Image 1 (cartoon, helix red, strand yellow):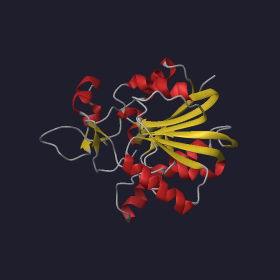
Image 2 (cartoon, one colour):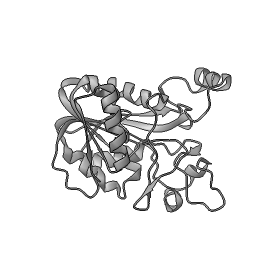
Image 3 (tube, one colour):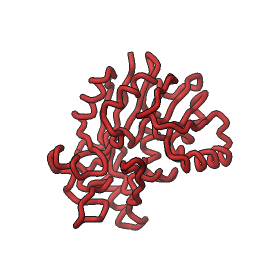
Image 4 (cartoon, helix red, strand yellow):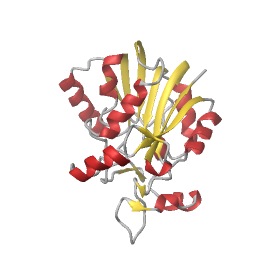
Length: 249
């Protein structure tokens, strides 16, 4: 899912448009997955829950035996298959389904779920992620981070139609979730949620803001070089997302 300003809704729920393959945000996620010990495996299969246009899945295609993207937007299926043909990724497939409503009876060795959990009608859908991951399997996810200055998914505020509402994410959870288009997470909250549903959490990191929404400029280059440098940060106020990898034992 994307962190761009455009909006899209389905069944009354806000869904971001897919990010671009060239976004630093996408490339950073894929590289953080690469750093997980044993995650890449040419003999394993991988599922991308909420794959969108396949921006992450296709970048991972050379490193897995088979890759499956799950998504519930028909227009994403068309775009996915177009890119699949352009890239010659014969080991990738798209399955159109709403994982919250469907009884998913598939299982996979590896699972990624980027910027999706916050859109689930209920956090309890995380139980589905646990169910479709094989025992011994590994999972990598990202969710939007509470202590980032701007609300990246926007909110239903009549006097503030601008998507990136400053400081809105700092509100108490009860107020934020009353008006926000999507949930946001602290490291503690997302780790607690995953443990609740059986996952063994191995590591949680703050992802440095990629500044993809800014136009290329000397100012942006300076910011990335001196302030928002590196893929992960120890400063929560410089992080747009939380990256977590976990296992099913």
